[in-house]
Image (cartoon, rainbow, N blue to C red):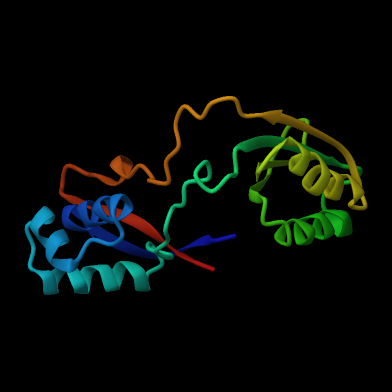
Length: 177
């Protein structure tokens, strides 16, 4: 988990525009980004390097189309453990790392201990390869899955409006691992 430290990182409107543009198209060249935010390519390069060095940009990635790749079944799965935390929690979290079908796993409050986003090629794959493996994990007390009928919204872009200030600068707590 990342924790804020005392040093603040100042972001100006150019930085926020660059972050927004990169979320939309990580392949944009420095010149293309510069044209969007009205800076030179070299200024953009320095700013992007600084944003990357400070951890605001973690990585660049390609978003693949699950449907076109034959991963047509999506499930939101709630998992409860006999005892949350301790060895059972660590063992569950370690096992999830080896399941590529699990796209996301969040530890949550409420009735379940974890919420998983799972993809599979079909219902048999979901049931046989994923849910059976989850059920077999030591300490798992219940699994409840909901199949996704239709995705209404999907985005990887983080909202940045809360960082804008009338002064044209925003303070962001720098994060460290």
